[in-house]
Image (cartoon, rainbow, N blue to C red; front, side, top):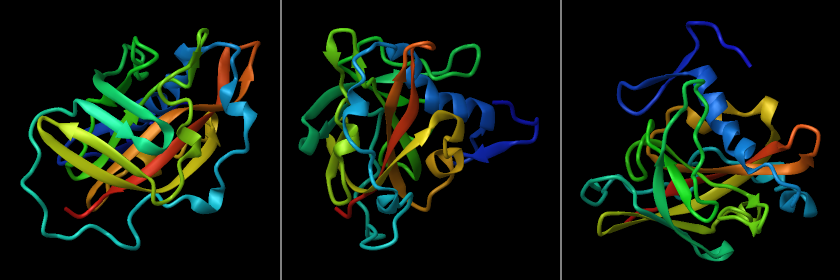
Length: 215
């Protein structure tokens, strides 16, 4: 997918990231996991009606705790049994997100906001490997109200899931995932849908949206 030279999305503070790079970052996590396990195809996709990309009800209070410091180091999602350290993810020379080397570890896209800062912090992880389920194998099971916890140093930050979406990679909702937000939000991304044996890739992305909870 190509983008014109003027297409960009404002990120946290003054950061600007080309749209083409954001699309690649959203989809590339699926590309390195090419296996025939096909876990995401075993169940129905998250209902589209549950998708709330931002905070509408029960938004966090403006009276917030002291700003967290340092990079995120851990993510925990009790409902789906995720408790993983976080590695920092970057882009390769083609502008695609480099997924975690370890299939059992999630990563944070270091080119965007950190969890707890204003803007959408993106966490990504593999769906599966040739050996079986990977760190985000059950990401599509999350529903509104589920909790996601992220650690930055000694500070634990809590987020509430507002919805989820499964979408074809060529229709990735770049603006909804990477666009500016009024407060601290999370995006958890993995691959999903049917496994295309000819290409060795999954056809879809699964995206979970979450907002910071009041402290």
